[in-house]
Image (cartoon, rainbow, N blue to C red; front, side, top):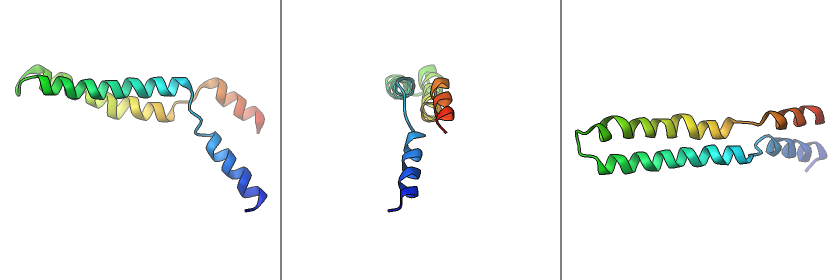
Length: 85
């Protein structure tokens, strides 16, 4: 493996560095998904719980919070990586 390839791999993995904020957002998303399924299971078939609250919680978990946790980067980390290049 050449020297250029090794440094390229290091930069690739440094870009996916997760902070505590990423894990917190991911945990909230996971909690939202679990609660959504629990609320859906506990509500009756045609209740507000099963038809409105649970789907909104699942949507927020799957479509908003989990992707946000994957793409969120701290501003301080952006500045540090820009100054190192």
